[in-house]
Length: 317
Image 1 (cartoon, rainbow, N blue to C red):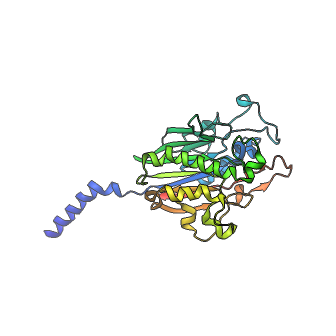
Image 2: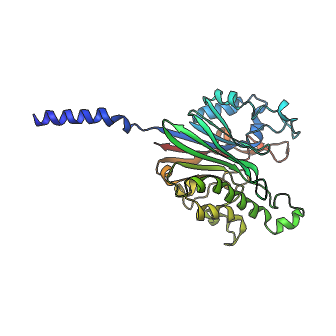
């Protein structure tokens, strides 16, 4: 009788709470696709779509998500009348199975776009304060609803040059590391407008990803730069002032992984601890369609399909 009662109790408990034990695997793919996947736009993006379908991500974050140049040339397009992206991301995303699309960050022609199998909403687009702070390519904060669990995604693409934005004397500014200081200022502002404002202890699910255009001190065993190099300012700020964790650094300590054709790691995925605990794997894709090579026509230094490599992070909720 006691055995029967115990079995009944277990069945009741399973009926009440068994569903909560369901595990959901989520795959996030980030990629700077260089000028709106310029390399494949003349092919109707067929190779790009097949690549994304083969990876089967649940959420994608695309940097440089706007068409900028005419096919097989370095001639700039004449605005929206020629550019397929970002205006048709909804159509392109449906081809690889994503129903939801959100323009996350946009200030110029280098926006970031998030596409997803799960509902997305925009929280904030971050372009600066209209006074002394400019986020040159824009940044964004979106939320993805994964079956009732909220994941915050901050997208960004920081300023790329050695000299400061709008510097009158670019040579002098570069010598004074103006670009490094400017990027660090952008980063500080983006964090102050997102995680530090809403969840400074990092208790929620947060991802910050993009093209940071800055190297990390965590990789200095590879770069061998002086400890006081201003190139580290941006990521030093993130490490010191925010709850974010660099997922690649965490999973591959002491192992350098380049994210660009040039050999630097400047594309990152940062996570808060609750999401870090859900990580099953994270890696760069450097082969197959994503293999980066210099375009033989030497057009503005373009690469095929991009001068950056995709990053994949797998989670289990």
